[in-house]
Image 1 (spheres, rainbow, N blue to C red):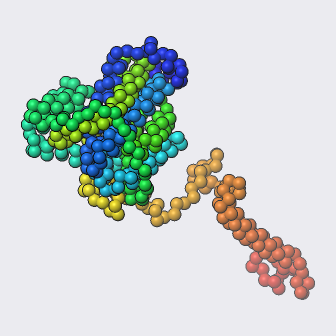
Image 2 (image 1 turned 90 degrees about the vertical axis):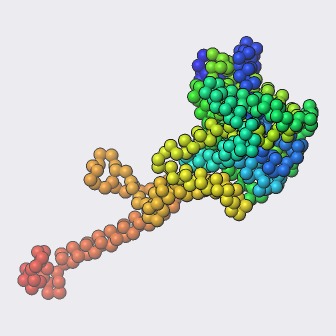
Image 3 (image 1 turned 90 degrees about the horizontal axis):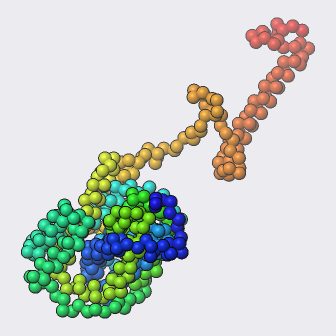
Length: 489
């Protein structure tokens, strides 16, 4: 069955779940969840540590993004009978590692709400694809590459600090990337845990099997946080998560409408932001696992993988406090290495895409350099300034600078049947079509008509004067050059 011809509906899909369920789809959903927790969640942990959040706030953050991802994945997969995989914004978490420390946590929550509201509006109105056309993709990917660069560098910095742990993880990742690329991150994490346990570097004495007690944070709003955190978070989420997520679905033959997917994740982000969720969005890497043949040979039955992935999100999210206590017991070198290795693919893809267009290469380079510079102007984070620098550079290098200073001429199309060498007659614009233009046009026409009437009046007066006798009773000659005295009487 072609997934493009599926009928969307909640009740019809619920009836078919027992018949469509398969062990392969459930296992693939579990693997996708493990991949999400193996790499991207560690980045959230890094951001929370850098911002000085408490264990309760971090547990609430993990609970919020897990519950939001689980509920949206289950709902959308059942509604559209498509393996719609949602997750928290990995580029957004990367952005928070460097930006969250610059603002109070309540201001950051306000920035999350602003970003979620904008994403919801873009999803409901369908303006997502329209707005993204104004920012070249090379600039957004260059900004993302600049944010990810520090994570890649930390892999080798950790190798210098603790080589006995970092080197086995790096080699495991490289070998797994060649023969088992889908499971490279999971296998690398397992090897890192085994090596850390053998070295006695795991501190799991404080691990507790407890459920999460969500923490509500009253949001506050500041212009600095909205501009420096909210806007870049919205852009990287839409450009680096939602757009590729829709592309993954289309690549596997699922013609699912984008607007309801983006709107649903935006609403979930809006509701869970006060509990610490920085953003729920469509997944790309984990979505590719669930939309492929590994889930099921029949594309119309792969939606079970999306439901399974969402269910595992809910289970893991309920034990967010346990996951937090485990993370606090891991060596910081292990967290840095696994987070950096998990982002290798995103970093290389971002760099390649940023430099792929020769016309926009310098714009991407400027964006990349500004982003890695770490500058902060007026309390606004570096990601925003990298984006602004790239857009300005693109306008100067590739925009029509002459039109900024020269008024465009009113070029009108030729009338039907008129040759190219002749000018088309000017069309009178009615007041109903364009009132402002009509006022100007009518004024010009009035002046022309006035001059025409004046000219016609003078011409008529001269013509009549020739037909009347003069003071001597003679009529003036009609031929020019004949003296009046020589005219016949």
